[in-house]
Image 1 (spheres, chains in turn yellow, brown, purple):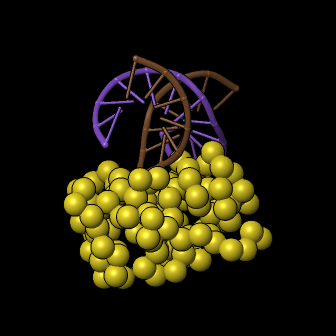
Image 2 (cartoon, helix red, strand yellow; image 1 turned 120 degrees about the horizontal axis):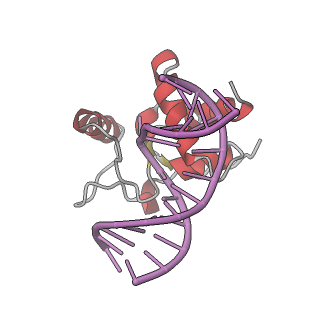
Image 3 (cartoon, rainbow, N blue to C red; image 1 turned 135 degrees about the vertical axis):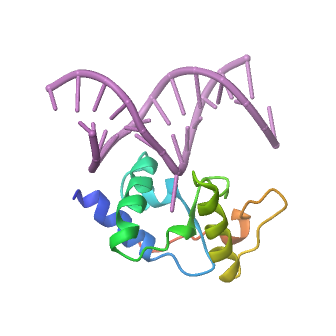
Length: 105
DNA sequence: CATTTGACTTTCG
DNA sequence: ACGAAAGCCAAAT
């Protein structure tokens, strides 16, 4: 697997409960600002084998973007279970919940 | 090897 | 603020 993929995994595992990151942010932290789609792929592939908090990753508006309705509900539940409130439009207020990593390793 | 495929992002109207 | 179109890049086919 590409080193980028590994870094993506590590970044995702570093997201604390009750916080979220955008796909773009994760990609950026993993060293590839344009790699949002690869982050998506990693989530798909690895969330089965590794235990990744895929539900803490949303699109740049804090929206739940998942392709299947069931997945959306799942993610909503998990987030709310961690104390994340969704606004009227069903979005996560990134202003409050966006996780900003400090180290850049 | 060429084409398709995304749980995305940016830009333009 | 919203929708459409183009851009991006690694994996699967």
